[in-house]
Length: 368
Ligand SMILES: [Zn+2]
Image (tube, rainbow, N blue to C red; front, side, top):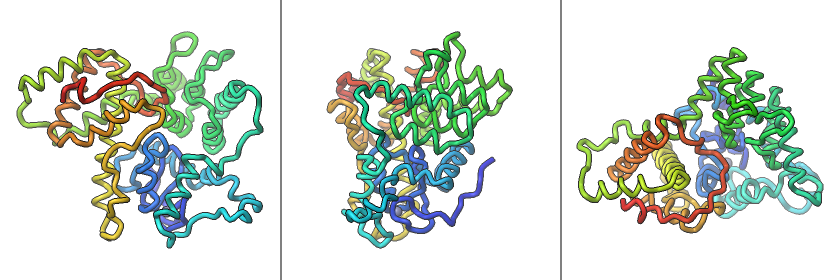
């Protein structure tokens, strides 16, 4: 099912040949230099993954490659294709341009400010627009046109939109239609494989009933993505003897005292930190030209996500201070407590776009 990585591609941001990385949520392939900027912006802007040195579910890789080869990049550079913009001096960087400031400023404008995305005509009621877009998404996921759906998502369509008349979410529709790649895209944008329809049936149920067995299995996998990835990260890193010091016991107690919402946030933050550490490792193994490994290309801790409270962002950054053993212990505690809380039920998808604003003093509360 996995397609061979197309080596004739160029970086979506600076046109450098042979991009080694991809941005999953943007559907583009990017070079090492541009990737260092993407990483510094954080996963809420760009979820990066190395094309060859990271593990890929085959259909996720296929989704990204399909978007990339079908020109998803034009979604993010829409107005740059307008001759009037070219006259105003806006242009794409070349591979030879400096990362800072030329490439980094362009990448921030492109993905963080969405400066070149096609804007809809302004309406009085933004809520209506979002609802319209989400309804369009709901019907478009039945087709194979990934770019259409990514465009709708880029304009604000909601992946978890519950269609009031149809009684389903877009993921139910994609699952029933057997649109594997659409399902991957929706999950990247936070769609919940366990979301009930009006009769309590999930997208996983829809896929099974329609005979799309592989898709159903993949959706189950997505549902457990968070805990599975934490567990996988532990492989080979599990401390030899379980730390049963008084401090560790106290930490475990505090973890158990967190309400479900705070616990889920903590698990998502730890997931992001696992992703940062793994991408760091890939980054280091793929850099053979030392000039690239400068301080400015490093991502020493999780970048700020403005949707989170200052306290949560501080807690996220403090995770970088944990040494390998401490971090592994925290993950073990989270996994065992997740099991206790949910009786084997998976946590929400880590990419779910919730907007939690509950302040938390992560390290202090957990005492680790
Ligand atoms: Zn580039």
